[in-house]
Amino acid sequence: MPASPTTTHPRNALLSSHGLYHHGEPEALALQLLVEKRARQRNLQRDVAVKAANMLAELGNQARAADLDLLVTFLELAAAEAERERSRWGDAAG
Picture: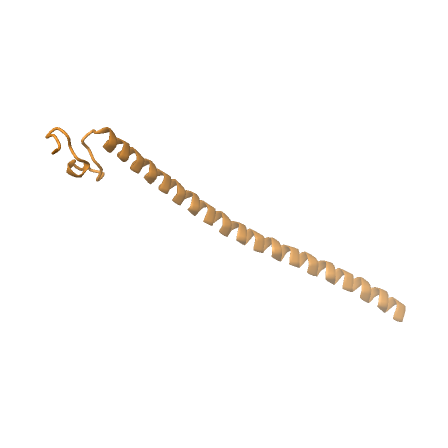
């Protein structure tokens, strides 16, 4: 049996300015809401991914700076220890 003239198939529904169905049928409105919700989720996910990438990059730089600071500290400690050893061995040899 053919569809009644008052029943509109989604394929025949008019498109809104957003490219979604605009006839007001519950299914079309639900679809529009789901599409808009998914678009917001994608935008939020993109924002979170960008923030996470920036944070990781910043932490990477901070970690490298901390590693360099630690290396300098170890070198300073080693130089002080070498100076103590040189003084001790120099005093014992003299």
